[in-house]
Length: 205
Image 1: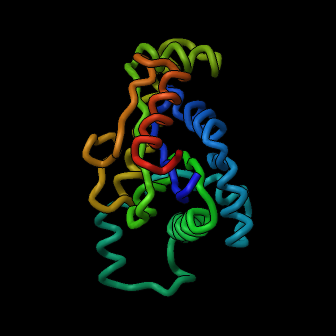
Image 2: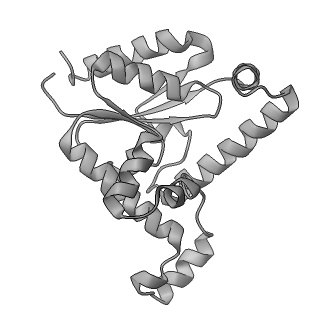
Image 3: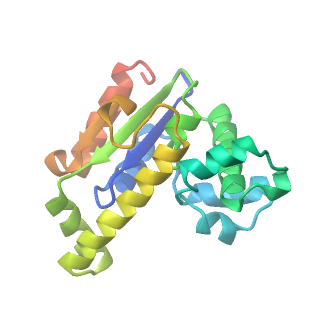
């Protein structure tokens, strides 16, 4: 492996993006960060892990709120706590990217690292029926509850991503290097496809 790289995986809820990312990291022999990232953010920032977990991928205030804050700058002690948590997340993700190759799930990693030469932004999606079936089986929910959880979670993720990302939209093909329909390929073949793409990009031998 001749180059340091980061694979940033965004995903629809129930698409299997976490599993794909984990298996891809194992196949590449690199570190995997999803919930593991929260512990590192807490450690690096001195914030409590419970606080970091609470604000994990949580949508921020409205754009109007942000514009108002730009007009009336605050000291750091007055900055909303979710903004502080996101800034700590930015610093930790950048630190990780400088140290090693890895796979990072969510948390606007592709936007945070947009100036990194060897960044690959991935979006994993699937049709609603496939996502419902996965969530029902994994979480033990009824079809209606699974659908409700998928819609609610994806709305939250999109809001978080669209707020913090620069010139990117969650799920937009123009915002990602490659998108994968996990329902069509399945988990393992999705991993193979991404592995081949990384190899074709010249990041691995």
